[in-house]
Length: 149
Image 1 (spheres, rainbow, N blue to C red):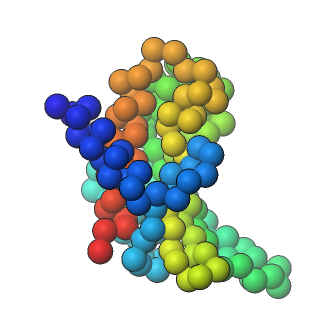
Image 2: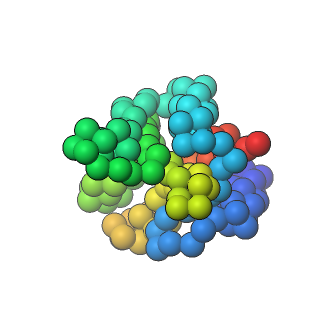
Image 3: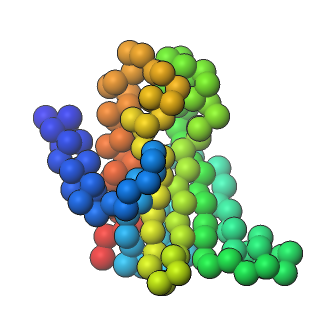
């Protein structure tokens, strides 16, 4: 039943996603800051560790450059990441998980994250399908929490 829910969530998000290799990108009706705040709230509610929140636009401003609002939230849970690294330690380069929230040239806010199945191919993970499905479902849920109206 849980994997059926994961499939339904993936299909729902696929209908909202912008295509890019290995990146799931979903429109948000909120500002970049509000979307990132909503993500942090959802992560905290599920007991996830938030390692950092980086404001790339502020970084650009600090060197006299302009960048549309862009924030990166870095988060994870060793209970999930460790089993993935046990399958292939090289996936550690892509962990902890990250969500990039940005505003495009038209003013649309986007929420993006690495597709776990793309990462599985990249790192040739074997025997981790159950963990990958769990990660995919969790990321989908976090994306929905951050971007729902």
